[in-house]
Amino acid sequence: DAVERGEYRHYMQKEIFEQPRAVADTLEARLGPHGVLPNIFGAGGDELLAKVRGLHIVACGTSYHAGLVAKYWIEEYAHLPVGVEVASEYRYRDAVVPPDTLFVAISQSGETADTLAAMRESKRRGYLGTLAICNVPESSVVREADLRLMTRAGPEIGVASTKAFTTQLAALALLALQLAHQRGLDADRYAGLCAQLAHLPRAIEDALALEPAIVALAERFIPRQHALFLGRGVQYPVALEGALKLKEISYIHAEAYPAGELKHGPLALVDESMPVVAVAPGGPLLEKLKSNLQEVRARGGELIVFAEGEAGMDGNPARGALLRVASGGDFIAPAVFTVPLQLLAYHVAVLRGTDVDQPRNLAKSVTVE
Ligand code: G6P
Image (cartoon, rainbow, N blue to C red):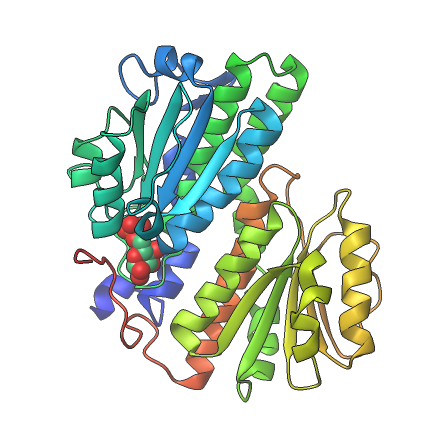
């Protein structure tokens, strides 16, 4: 065990630091110098994708959050409608399936009972086809799908998923790019997005260098019972994933909200004892997010802000901290901003002395309903 963990204290920490390699492996021989390579989703894949007029993405847990990010990407770049749903809901309701809809299952293990059942159910619902984004080639989800794109995260031991998530994002980014390219995305824009994606392993490497600053930050969470995570746009699913990581392994109750919803409820909870973590890369929604953060500050809440370089949030908030994260561009920002949130959850859990790799009551793969 100690041999496999090497210099790291837990598998989770090791897996967080394996992300540049895992993401690079996932992009290898799939993203070429001129874009996404042909038929990376399997034989006939590009032909099938060209017919797609909408997508339904189904998954559980962290994989569901990856699906939410993909919705923002695919709708923005390929202009295709995307529905994302947790598998345990999807399988028991009558989802309406418009013509030429692709069913996409995302699963690290490929054996999650609800995801597998949802995929089997989808076969009766008249989809154009099924695509699996998965980390285990011989798994049931992969075997039963028409198309597949394997994440190449390697074995993930920590129950709280880390490298599986960022490699899922890399795979879904390839899907978004392919769909967008087929639907006539401007060539320069396509090339720019491909270049950003190629840079992702390096951008994650840079984000990992924030670890010492995050260790210092984590101390503030030791006595906390609640935390609120905020994001806007494509960073909202990142906030969801950050909150999930914290609750899974530190047992601090954490919730994520799209920052614009703050005034519709969670603001009532904000006081000195409630840390608020915000993911704030650049982009048009930054100004809006800043005014949301003012609302938190005005109520004495402790603000922890992860912001893009010089995102105009200079000067430390009165109570709280500002950490600079270089996103590497709007497209890959959700994958990059996930990394400091993983590190935060990890170090809070270590400081609180929980069983980081084996959190109570949770399983790595939930193969029964
Ligand atoms: C469990 C794990 C999570 C994972 C979820 C879905 O809850 O603890 O880390 O995200 O299952 O698993 P899957 O293998 O389908 O991605």
